[in-house]
Amino acid sequence: MDGLFLSLPFADDCAMIPLSDPVLHVDGLTKSFGPVAAVGGISFDARRGETVGLLGGNGAGKTTTLSMLLGLVRPTSGTIRILGAQMPRERHLALPHMNFESPYVDLPKRLTVRQNLEVYGRLYGVRQVRKRAEEIAEELELSDLLNRPAGMLSAGQKTRVGLAKALINRPQLLLLDEPTASLDPDTADWVRHYFEDYRKQHNATILLASHNMSEVERLCDNVLMMRQGLIVDRGAPGALIEKYGRASMEEVFLDVARGTGRWGELQEERGPEVQEQIAGEGLPL
Image (cartoon, rainbow, N blue to C red):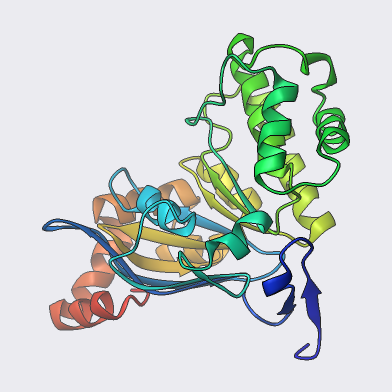
């Protein structure tokens, strides 16, 4: 594998990336807002074709982590490399090949669906942007909505348009923040199927922040469990369920978020000195 490379279009300065390298590499990442440590030193990799879940309760540090990965928030310390580019200094090399989707981020409401897709397509350097907008609209069953203002869409339609925006540049790294929140079960299932198909067809990497644990079990190859700004455990969903002696990821999530059950027992077994060492090094507990 060391001799194989991925050629990325429209980013000449980082066009040759070894296929063996992680798409996303995070090492010792921290972010403090005054005396508050929102992210306390996390490290992880996400490899090509892998879906990684980023889990944690409100205030665990997920949103701050995503913001740093996108280059919107400057880390206090630590390293982020995306497709070989050092973030945020070289974000202009990585951003054309990554994208982000969240139902909590509205598109300009007065612009039509077509206008939104073309504007974002141009921002990402997409060639033949009108053709690409029509292509992705057809894939996501949005063709009939292309001339409708974004502010006049239903919740499900807005989610599909947001997904179209996120895929307009065929990203190699896709960051998702609760992508199926507020969707009915049928639409949510359709969206998850699309994510699975996209990842397989493009060998893309997905980082998924979600509170829907059945979604996590279905989509994720590996999971990072965050608590109080740290990654406190990690592993495949099935392995974590077995480790905690639970029936589902939802029960594992509750143990970690509340500090109860098997997670609480593990902390007592390790003792405070081991916990402090692990937290300081940003390693899994």
